[in-house]
Amino acid sequence: MAEGSIGGRLRVIRESQSLSQAEWALKADIGLATIKKIETSGNVPSGETLLKYARAGFSPGWILTGAGNMYLDDAAAPDHDFHSLRRGTAIDGELMGRVVDAIARLYRELAISLSPVDLGRLSAEKYEEIAAASSDPAERMAMVKLMAVQLRKELLAPPQADARKDRA
Image (cartoon, rainbow, N blue to C red; front, side, top):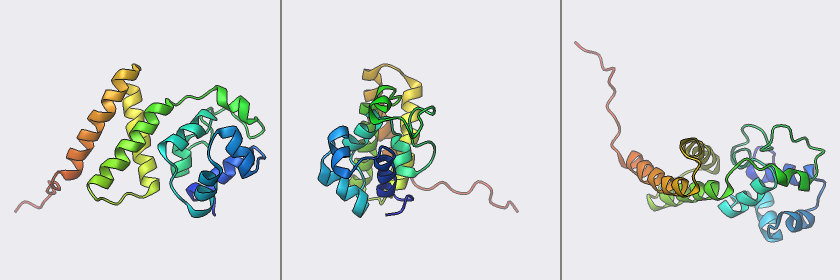
């Protein structure tokens, strides 16, 4: 699987730690079958799995999209071991998981196709908006629900007419 895919990026993470799939499963507390499925068949990781990678110091945004830095901490270098990466997590894992889950669920309910890359991009964008607006965990969770309501409204809104039509 290519590095340009989600499975390929997860393989890069595991290999950066010089670990087998079984060793990574134990260290990251992720099921071996889950790791194998994602790395080989390109399944999209669940919000819970993304949280475990975030706790290990890896960027969920990079995992889903390939954009930005692989590490949450820009100073993290590939020679750092797994345990040193776990300490400096800069993402609220619970919030990220809830955002990914809310968006995926909404698109599924509306029967709108959303690629894993687009799910990652949209989730990262909405996560950043919520995280920037409040630092209170309870407020952030309430904002996830509001974000989903607003996104539903945007998705169901009729397309806007082009305001630049030629005037005769």
